[in-house]
Image (tube, rainbow, N blue to C red; front, side):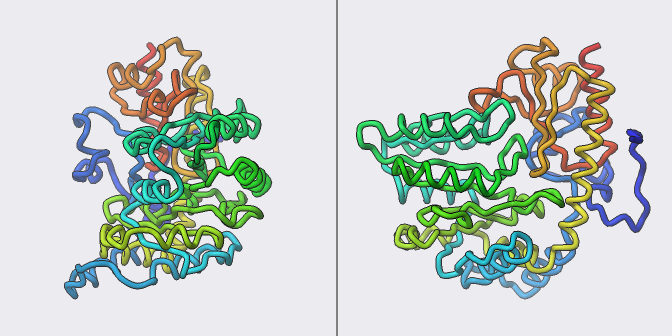
Length: 393
């Protein structure tokens, strides 16, 4: 394949090709303000894209109207239900079993409060999204790890062992499922998720699924919502348009209950629903209802970026292991063969001036790895790999 990035034509719909580095450096968000200007940032999960036009229009109209009060209504849930039917063939999202929450991680905290207590265990599949650890621990819960398999998929034997340890002594326990998985981009199959539900039921473990990356699944790969598999009726899920349309600064998310978890969700304190941004709810609703064409163009661009990164690494850094996952805009890179120690991200930052996420905060299995953000232009990816290779020279 041609590994030379080219500037797009003016009519290229791929949003990853629309912004220059000079334009991106005008941004004041975390990605672009944490490091000096000589550092190329490919770390935190912000994408280098302009907003989808339906989102811009909805937010602009709301601000022009002064519609900046507290969130209300079910428009967000209705939009997500329609998106789920169209994209995933899932018609099980019942609007009456949803609640708006400030964002996915704060929603996770609230769901875990509903199904566990202080000192109880929360099982996670490491390596996994780093905030899982401090959020759980700050709730006075214990993290129990169930490592992914060597193929970066769920290891059901390890999961069952973790469930046994979590409920030892008759304690309650929860399983914080990351689906699709961050950082690997793995999409769990319907069979895997059904097996998870069966294990959880057998051991009395309540499942809370973080499904924030659900819209970001490559064409040809099937995403199955956890609540859509047999046996998941007591599960709870958190979903959001945040990652799919780059809306982290417009905070909102939805908590969704399976039929047997409706009473649990009903115990959610009313004030939790005051935390989301009303403008965020408007933006997310517009994205889910009217942002499908933009999302399709993005997904095609991310697929191209995965192939580009794999080719560049094979040519410039053949010692780096990369197993492209079909979801998220994140790449999990195994750098252990490079001899850079447990934290190769520190070396790439110091010698190459490229910022990646260190693998260490992702838990067991993260040492010697980095996470690279693919949600950028092909030119930036090529420059990042060039800098990484130069750091080893």
